[in-house]
Image (cartoon, rainbow, N blue to C red; front, side, top):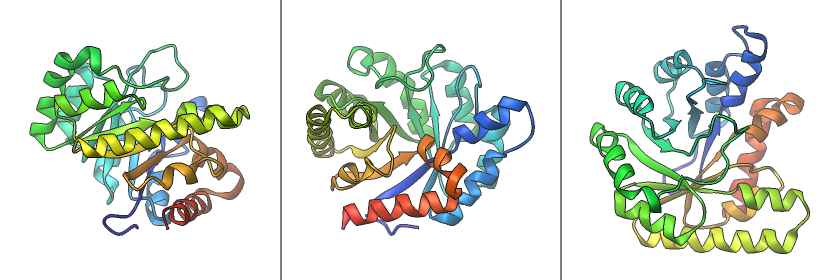
Length: 249
């Protein structure tokens, strides 16, 4: 596990549940994957309880809360149902994400600037209960500043566009997006926000983001679960950690 002040790795285990649910079986077990991730050096576990329960289910959150020795980052939409679940469990952190039922994965960042009043009232009880509140947002100055105004403690910057541009070979645009992420990381920190980043990161794309000194945590899931099919989850996490640490050094 990393030492305080170093770059942390949060491992998202949603897609272990996706594989399980494809057959309606009891395996593979997300908690088992989470514990393997812990042993391999993950600093935290992320799980997204979607409204349609397409992967992680309510029983998974119960099991993770009871079985983990590292913090749980509970990803959730800003709905009354999810707020009640979060307040019942009081995980270490909650990350508010945008959610549309028809999307394959989280598309874009949360709209904070136009929803300031609603989100300020929404996150207040979560903060009062002792959860660290994070908002998953695009690298956009209006969203960063709105997040600071409403009392979020953390912003997680959406790295999906950067990763997509890399995969498509659009390297000038990728570099411009990387610059935006770097700029907004620094700006968010200057406003007193802790900065995290994630979405779509791979062995090929992680190092430039990991090198930002303001970023304290990366949350990575789909790639690690996919890579584990070929090399195993501990090996995938160990290699990701090596690349992160190398970039940070």
